[in-house]
Amino acid sequence: MKNYDLKRRQFLRLLMSLPVGLVIGCDLRPYESLVYARTLTPEESLRKLILLLGPWSATDREKAEDFVRRFLRAKHNIDPYLPVSSELVQSLASRFPDGTLAIKEIVLQSLPTKEKELLMNMVKHLYSLIDVRSEVSEWPPWGECLTDETWHTRAPVLGKI
Image 1 (cartoon, helix red, strand yellow):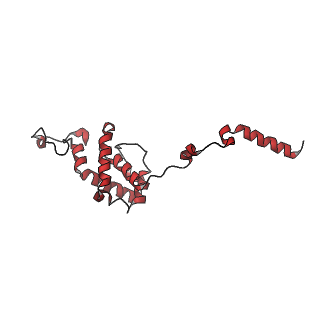
Image 2 (cartoon, rainbow, N blue to C red):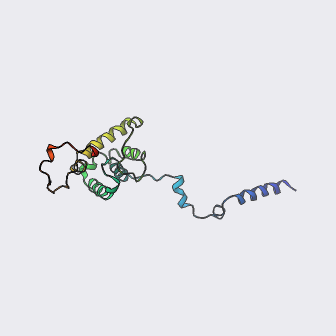
């Protein structure tokens, strides 16, 4: 037997061990997400961060999505973050898992200084807004009257802080 017969047999043995789809040449686009992570746009990254930092529970997803839509439409809300800090917002958002709502704890020591500052400024900004403050303090929605006129005489609910 000649040398090229051995190499050919080794090549055929290699082809036999590969999945059939790879040998034939099937469409590999579904597998691209495993190799190349999808990069979020700056707006998607900001949306993800707002959902992470907000006070919403898993059952309040619709309320959170509504708030994010309104937040992103208001130019004065997004000016401090986009487009000035777009890369920073994307970098920070990539550190957290997708689909997470109202993360409970973030370890700030592991973050670079600029990302830490951006995160703290975003938290201050979010929690200064009336919608978020109403959610945290369990006030009724904006425009509805309080049913209890003595609400200001009681301590805040400890479970929501």
